[in-house]
Image (cartoon, rainbow, N blue to C red; front, side, top):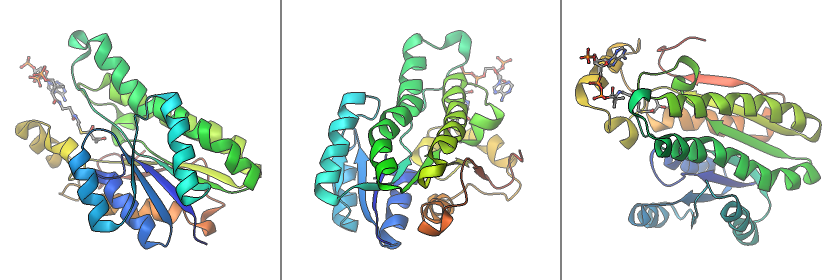
Length: 240
Ligand code: CAA
């Protein structure tokens, strides 16, 4: 059945591929972005997927944004919490601002968005929530205490909300991507990136489509018995 899907960070990187996969699956998709207006407009022009701008780390902004999407596209049935940032530093040099920004954007946003859609999903008896975590939330990563903590936090959140939503046909799952071919990974220094690549058994970075096809599967009406799970898509880099 056609649903309204909202993808945070939905115009670039993994989110772009996820938005397109959900659109291809027949859903009405809203892609949320914050900073890169030009990329978002180009994405919207190329795909005809509408884009919406707000800061997902801001609870009130999420409330207004959800209302705007629902007015234009109808009640949200699928939510993909994908927006995320890095601000890598070893802990002995990490500033409080680096900690707060990463935790608020990557984990705070999951509360903000879920809180604004969950009542409607429960009332309608349908919801598919997919949280995009990270291999580094599972295994840890040098220089990412902030990011790893936020991404690990998403896994606990996923399980708790999965239990709460189960009787209302609201499933909540997490996908933990490994290193993928995105701007975020391109920003890692080339020597460190090569070391990471050497540790991936399949011998390549993931593609955004590697992640998006799983998200579309989890978002499907027929995936109602899959909930509270974490799916690793990391080329064998980490086997939980
Ligand atoms: N394990 C142990 N020691 C390490 C190490 C590791 N993985 N990496 C570096 N070190 C050591 C270095 O050898 C160096 O030791 P010496 O001082 O004895 O030479 C020391 O730690 C300092 O290392 P750096 O020079 O790298 O420190 P820095 O302060 O210049 O940089 C950093 C720190 C920015 C965190 C840098 O190490 C880095 O970029 N690391 C990669 C972080 C990473 O993987 N980020 C992923 C981004 S993509 C993403 O997050 C998407 C996703 O979900 C997968």
